[in-house]
Length: 235
Image 1 (cartoon, one colour):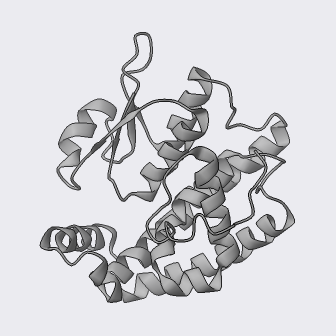
Image 2 (image 1 turned 45 degrees about the vertical axis):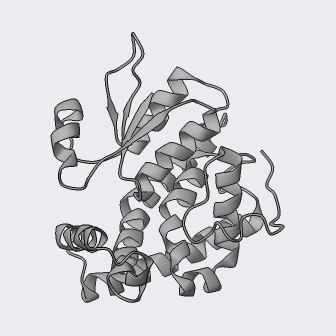
């Protein structure tokens, strides 16, 4: 299988976590923002990543959107399951995933790229990196006003997720679900922002645990704490 992605995209990370949890072998192809449209639109009719190319006879040529990739993987290889056996719990997990996708993933993008354009510029001051950041900020309308709204949305979301994860290792049910994978992936860019790392250590502990459970390398900002005795979660 081949995963078309932006290397730094948290939505693409979401797909990688699912593939890793299933233990499915795959390769990645990193595309350049803007130019990627020429590669993916003929395949899916969409302009977004990730896109999974199964490259298997009898399977779809391409699957666009991380949620659709979840559904395909569950059909292609049912075990270990991403979906919860209890239908009510699975519905709750799907609702959380949708909320994380449509609201929190977007808010994370706004806050992250605002940080990278300011004090976080030192992470990668190269001309190419700064050009990509500028393109993303223009494309999504990232500015001081929209970032303040995104910060408020994130504060509420992090409070809710903290309450969920304080009660149990998982957001829904007694094992990993699409909700946990979505949260771990879509909040991961915040690991590079010191204020969030300091304010929500329990959130980043869960992000680390879920990456380890899925066999996915830790996101930037968390590599230095991944082996420092964090409490493991049940698989």
